[in-house]
Amino acid sequence: MNQSTRDMKYRMIVLDLDGTLTNAKKEIMPRTQAALMEAQRRGVRIVLASGRPTYGIVPLAEQLKLAENDGYILAYNGGKIVSCRTGEVVFNQELAPELVPLLHDEAKAAGMEILTYQGEGIAATRKKNKYVLHEAFINKMPVEEYDDFPRQVQHPINKCLIVGDPQPLHRLELRLAQQLEGRLSVYRSAGFFLECVPMGIEKSQSLNWLIQQIGIRREEVIAIGDGYNDKGMIAFAGLGVAMANASTEVQDAADYVTYSNEEDGVAHVVDKFVLVG
Image (cartoon, rainbow, N blue to C red):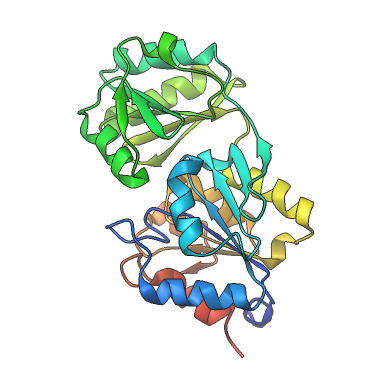
């Protein structure tokens, strides 16, 4: 880490949630919360950037008092950006309705389940699937089973999520990426979660749009994450940080590797690069 990086005055911290900001219980630990509150007191903006739907991010935004501190929610891997201060949706890109039947058929043919978000709940092809239940646990959202998913889904939606065992899901990811090239972006946010989002939607692209709107340079941004879908924003930020619990591939994209999400890794970064001096 060079001297200029250590001395940089950072104005924004962008945080992935699961595996980064929160521990295994999906909670923010006290030391991490205290560090982020102090960073905001010093004028640093917080952005919560996740594959989760907006509804699944709001409780953490409220816990960190982002409304009072002019923070943002970057939901659906960047498909929707909400100002916490005003509640306004400042950026939104919807999934083309005609892609949903195709994604549904491909998921079912591969023996997997597909879900999306409807209001304050999750709509899924099978309610009791362990990966569907995990998504419900992460977001604290109820699940409704749709027998005719393509017809029952109410549009607009921002994404679909295909869930299944990692190896066959990776094979499906490669097939869909080829089949829908130029029409859809697909990537895994976890080994068992395949994000299906509008073309070009990715955390770093939406983050770039946001900082241009509010007058912050990328060199003034810290981005912290652990997942495959965090690699872009980690590489984009002035200081890209990977968690110790991230894969080697994600760590290789980072400028700095911090402690794990069970060891207040986010607080360590805030203390070292923001609250110094």
